[in-house]
Each structure stands twice: as C-alpha cells, then as structure tokens.
Image (cartoon, helix red, strand yellow):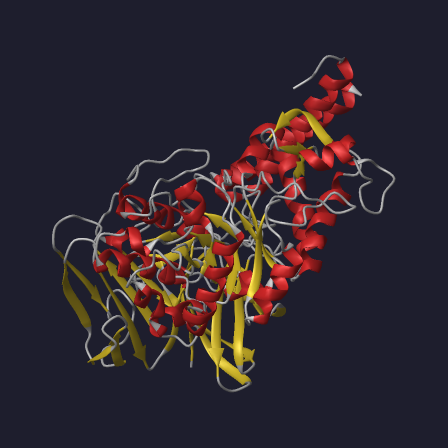
Length: 140
Length: 470
C-alpha cells in the first residue's frame, strides 16, 4: 500500500513538474506581451491556454440566420498558430485556427444564430493550444 | 479531529493527496460554472428579504410583520420586478418538524407552515424563497430521531459528534451513511413546498470545521438536487482559490461582509482596501464587486452584494449609488427595508430603466479591477445582449470629483456610431456624443445607456476564465 502510494506521488509530481514547465516556459516567443497597446476598448483577455479556458458572449439577434463574425485576436507566439474551438449555444461549430500574429488582427467566421439570446463561446479544448489573446468579436 | 490509528493516518494522507490534486487541476480554470438557467441569465433576482427586522431586534420576524411586508411588496415592488420574498436567519426557533425531521415552519411561534406561506406568496403572483442550510439538523430532529427519508438510517447517526452550529442546530457529517439522502431530501422537500430560491448560510463554518473535500461533496449534492428548479445561493463562503469549490455548484456567492447597519460604511468604507483570505474577503460592496468581477458574468457566478436598506443611507446620492451598483454588476437587487421603515424612499427601487438592466442580464465590470486605482475601479462598463453599452460612473470619495468616459477609445466604438446616450436616473436623452464627463458630488453616480449601430462585443466585458490586460 505504501509503495503504491509512493509511486502515485512520484507520478503525480512528475506530471505537475511537466505542467509547470509548460506554464513557466521561459521562451519569450511564447509569452503574452503584456505591453501590447493596439487593442480596442479598455483591454483584452489573455491566459486562455489552459484546457477549458473560455470566453463567453451572450448576444441577442432579431433574425435566425448565419452571420459573418469577425474575431480580433493576437497569438502568444510569432511563430506558431493558435487553435481554439468555437461553440454556439452549446453546439460545436468549428475548430478555429488563428494564424500567428504578434499584433491584433481579425479573421472572419460564420456562425448560425437563432432569434433571441445566443451564447457564443471560444473554448480551449483538449486538442487546442489556446495560445492567443482575444480583443473582441463583431457580428457583421 | 480524531486520528488515533495508523488506518486513520493512511486515510488522512490519501485525502491530503487528493486535495492537492484537486487544487492543482482546479487552478487550471477547467471548471467555470454551475449549468443552470440562473447562471445563463447572468444577473440575480429582485426580491424582498426579512433581514432588517431580525438584525434590528435580534429576534425572528413575527408572523404578522412578515405578512404585512409581503402585502406591501406585492403592492409596491412587484410591479417593478421584485417578484420574490424570502425569510432570513434567526432560525434557531424553527424546531417544528415533519415525520422526516425537516422543519415545517420558520418559527415555532408561527401559525402557518412554509407550504402555506409559499401558497400565499404565490397567490400574490410572487416566488417564495427559503433561508436554511440543509447541512443542519435541529435539536428536535436529533431528539425525535426519525429515519432519514428513503433509508433505514436514523437521523442521529449522521450528526457530527465534534462540531455543532450552536445549541439548537447541529452539523451533519457528509461522510456518514445517509447524509446524502438527508441533504438531497431536504432540498427536494423545499422544492415540493414551492420554494424556488434556497439561501444557504454559514457555509464557511462547514468548510472550516469539516474541510474542503467534504464541503465540496455537500455542495455537489445540493446542486444535484436543486437542478434547474431551485436557485442555489451561498452565504459566507470562503471562496478559496477563485471560488473553485463554489463555481461548479452554486448560482451565487457573496462578495462582501453583511450589510448590518446598511449605511455608506457598508457600500464603500468598511475595511476599505483590505483583503483577508477567508470569509469575508472584503468589508464593503465596492471592494467586493471590484475584486470578484473576474468570477462574474453570464454563464459564470452571480455576485451577491447582500441587501439594501435605503432608510439607513444619508442622502439620495448614496441611495442611487447603492441600487445602481447592484444593478450594474448583475447582483440580486434585494430590499431589506420594511413597510414601516421605507419612509419616502420607495422611488429608489421603482426606476424601471435601472431595474431593466437586471432583467436584461447585465453584468458590468470595473474598467480596472484594482481597488487601489480609485478612478478606474469606480467606472463600471458592461454590454447588454443587444450590444448597448451601460456605463456607471461612481464617486466613492468625500469630495466632488470629475468622472469621464470616452466612447471611442474606451468602449471601442467607431466615431459617429453612437445613436443615443441616455441618463437612466434623470430619464433623459442626452443626444449623440463621443465622450461624456460629469462632476459627481460625494457618493453620487451617473448611469448611462449608450445605443450605437455596431454589434461589436468586447472580450474584457464578456465572461471569461483568463485575465484582462489593460
């Protein structure tokens, strides 16, 4: 029993050690640039790389249809795309690839919305790296 | 805690390992809310709460006063969206129990049962809320010792021999067989009474006495039983580690200490700028809402500022600020004034345009969530689901100050995109502009609603698990 527990502890701390390495990666290319100022509004949301991390928007529309939507973001790395999963009303719409960009830029996606309240979620799923910061979304 | 045997030590160390694992994974932000229609709405209920009578007299509210308040609420507040009433604490005198050991009345001196009062409240077109903690066991239930509903287990066996709430209420231990049935049976019992809101107090007392693991287990069972039918309101939670224990299981947590006297001290001054790790982390409403803002939002946690006592505030500036802060942050707008103390202040609760913000699920946040940045943390901004911006400019200080907001640089609107700016207290359209500036007397506020022609939604004003960078 004691050996089992000891083994468990060793595996546990190795796992935590690995996680810590990822969390505190000293490579400046993967660090969020805290001094970035080209955001819109009063700020942006960072630290979205943990599994399950999300940004949720509650949005009302009058008409049920597909809407073009801009997503304004920047990636944490200049050399690697970010990935995140887009959900609308709890339904997965698509895996988004956010092309690497040091500065904020927009990509356009299509989202199916229904009249009334909708919940648009950008979530870092297990298959995503979530290495991005989000400035805003905008329905066109 | 008893740890006399080697077996106990082994069990304890296993639990420590489990807690460490839970804490590490919890910090990864993987859990973000209880899935319920209440968190999806984002803002809390509007209701009347019995507190003021109890705190002022330090006794349970008499039944006649309770009824007079319900009738007053139905006539004067329900038309403005305040559609629920709830008892408060001082529940030690609730020792009348049913065959399952559950309390049937708020107080032994009352004639009518919870069920009868729930029916009466519903006959007035309102909802019925109950203040009680299903982790409690009354002294009477302990002495009568019935079987726990649906089991062959006696009630007495789930009581903790080591921790008592007080002489009249005992804590149950969730690790004892039958505890789950007791807790979920209690929640289901309240549900059957017609209760739609359960205000569960002293939860930090449970966590402090029994530990986080058992506290989480209790919350999980309560949430399971509550489902979509009962709003789960936690009071006095420690909310350790960004409320990782509470987020998956509660609809609402308190952000600051009790209202008590209900004056400006409660809204802004009490222990201003001071944080403590355990309940209550903050002493006043502003500090609480500023620092808990990261946890609030649609689909996350509803932040609770306790109640309002308009009759205890010094002037109308403070009254407008108190209710506006609740409306802006999506907090429940809870009235603790009584029919005989409200005086001529009822108008504060009757501003349809302020009340509508809660109906629409607004959860605004301070521009900077740093209580030491007094200017930016006194400016709250939020977006309604149709894209409208709502801006709250507050003056917490004792001198007149100018507060401003730039719609282009701070709200991210395009030039000329503003359609109309409206002052929600003056109920006046202010016209089209790119920015707004106002001199605010001490403790005053200005609440603006800005219509514009874009559908841009800022991430820093949405619900999120990450961090805002300004």
